[in-house]
Amino acid sequence: MYNTNWPLHQSTPTSNVDWGALADSWMQQREQQAQWQQAPLP
Image (tube, rainbow, N blue to C red; front, side):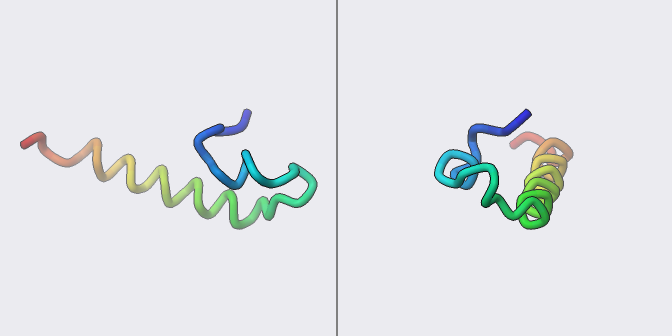
């Protein structure tokens, strides 16, 4: 499954994707989302 919100996925052929960098960016997004979810609502 691919996250279609990633510009990289939309603009880059699958064969040319740097999966290592893609995984790193995915982990960073997951960490940011976790921080947002844990943050108290204003």
